[in-house]
Length: 314
Image 1 (cartoon, rainbow, N blue to C red):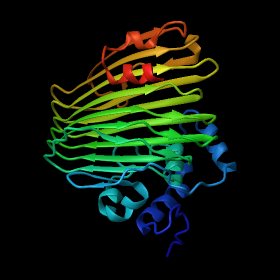
Image 2: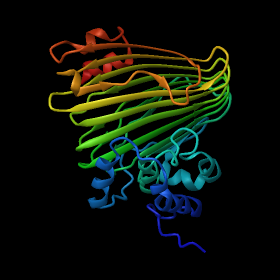
Image 3: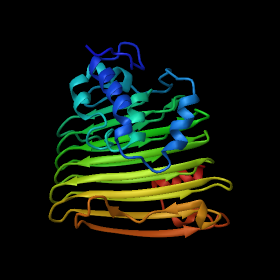
């Protein structure tokens, strides 16, 4: 029998230990990902952090929120099927596989079918590790708003992953404004959307470090929508990249992206155009607006919007 020696948390289920071990063994067979050596080299010399973080949310009622380290046991079957399988695939590249092997914190959110929440689910943890990860599962026909404003305090290289798995005809507004303090960070916000679902993404980033943002969704079926508004501020001396990709198919399935980018020079902020990963003929469109650091980003953002409020507060 294979020795299970890849556990990060106490009482980690066998399936997760095996999955971590497979990721470690097989990662070199997968494609290299852009810039991966900056993370892999840093992790090889960093001490493992097993503290799961502070200000983690726990809620058990019409919806569930748990620390991921707890949910892998209590919602074992659901996470065994979905953790890094449909949205952020651990087999897509070496960096993703290394991330799975090292996931050391994060939140699990589960909203069952036919739930309508009037108030946002708010996630605002402080995370000390290098590989925090959120798994958010929203059932069919549900309506929910989720706000994430996490603080990542690891001084090295951080890969923060968020997976949104959205059921048929569900609507999810996901708003994220996370802060990194280390040398470099990768923030992935990836979705899998069933037929007729709608993800409204609001994403802001203004950390004074080097940040790569990966935005992705697979739009699986007709009348599936992904609409994103993204605001990126690059402080002097920092660097950011944003890579948005959509995949999928279906009649009346669309993707829309609006980006406001603020930086000293164009080289400080690399904005890739919204594209399809597989070449499918999706109905996609993007609008970009660039500003210098002498301009006020908050005045360009929609009045009263969540993003405007976050950048005004910052």
